[in-house]
Length: 149
Image 1 (tube, rainbow, N blue to C red):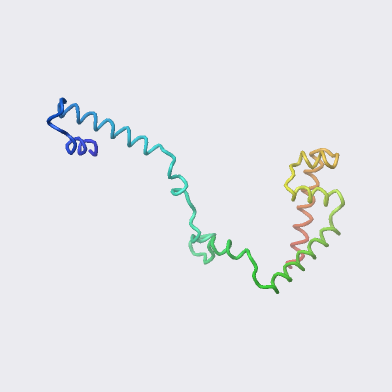
Image 2: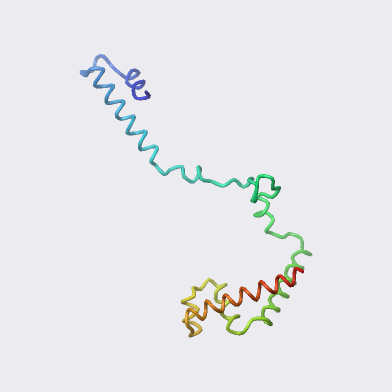
């Protein structure tokens, strides 16, 4: 319909073509333009965004993603000191409950190294690295459960 409208609007009697041929050309070009526009990936970021004001868990939740993002920085010096002390306590306890292999594996993993890189650094098998990380996970979960209760 848009192609037909444009044909009516732009048709000139002084040109050497019939209205029918001109209208078919306009309509065909409009269809091609519509298909190109529809298949273009130009607006995907805008159409697939996630609102920062959307409730996180369910529609009744008061917390939004914006709250979580903005709440991650601590500006109060007292909170910073308490957080640092808690971090130091957890790190000290991890040193007590983890073996030296588990500690080395965890530190390498936290540095962003792959299982293969850690295995090469520590001259161990990849399966040994995976097992060590699984033990670390279980030990830390038990520690955090005890700490919360």
